[in-house]
Image (cartoon, rainbow, N blue to C red; front, top):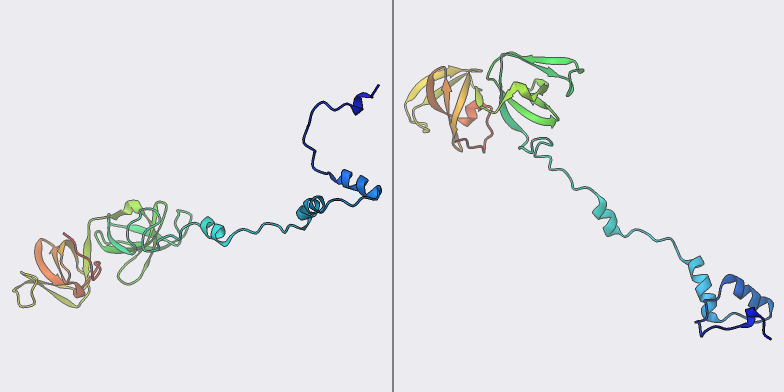
Amino acid sequence: MPRPADLVTGAAAPAPASAETQSAGTQSGQAPPPAAAAATETPALAAPAQPAPAQATAARPPARDMSKGSVTNLPLPRFVSLKGNGGNARRGPGLTHRIDWVFTRSGMPLKITAEYEHWRRVEDAEGFGGWVNYALLSGVRSALVAVDMAEFRARPQDDATVTFKAERNVIGWIEECLPDWCRLSVQGEEGWIRKTALWGVKPDETIE
């Protein structure tokens, strides 16, 4: 009577030759079939998978547009005005940084060059400045007379009537800007002046 280990219960598919099976075949003097040898050698000879260049490129974050603020997404640089009668400009974006400059003229135009959380790095017409809290700044636009004596005219034309004059560093509120001219309100008077005589507005900027 056959032993239980000799009984075959079905036509099962032969299992892949294992390392132990190949070793037994070798010991019995029989060489393993070529296919079995290849199946055993292939994993041992396979080189580590290298990441595809396309995958490495896709993993990189997109480059930030340096022409826009990282907080507001508004253009950089851009002009604003000082909201109150004073503002501390600090060496870094935070109250722990030392004060390098103090702005004292309400309404003076300032140029924003960088953003960080609630702080904006600004500079005045002479290039002085630092980091100020955004609460000290206003989006209402102003401009500074940048020539010794500026002539404001009734219309945006060089031959138009001169309505009043203003000295260097006088501040006016911008009411309108065309490609070459701006209309300002200065101490109750209004007039047109060429952009080249102002600081606080970009050459290609139009304001309605």
